[in-house]
Amino acid sequence: MALIRGQKKRHLNILNTQVQHFDCLNNQHFGTWMVKHFEHARQNLALTMEGLQRLGFEERYLREQWKDQIESQSLPLPSKYHSANFDDNVCCTFLIMVQ
Image 1 (cartoon, helix red, strand yellow):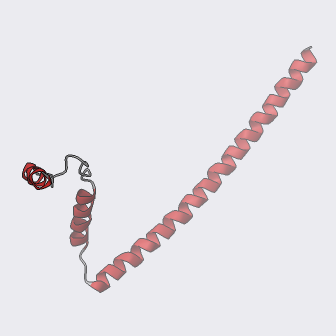
Image 2 (image 1 turned 60 degrees about the vertical axis):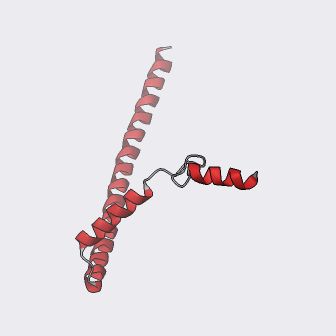
């Protein structure tokens, strides 16, 4: 019985070592991936800023436009039955025309 416990403990230690090894490898790969993608994003930003400068757009103007676009797209959609265009006068006019 002690031999089985020793084998199980040894097996768990081996598994633990393997997991730690793969964890270190994954961290290294993740770090490499992060550096590669960060550099790519930095190059894209530099190209974009260069293009915007060539076109004569100021960053402040573009940020204001972006803010306005987000605000206009963030408004809740009007309800089907309670829209801003729904007017009681229109409803009464329609009912008079139908009768």
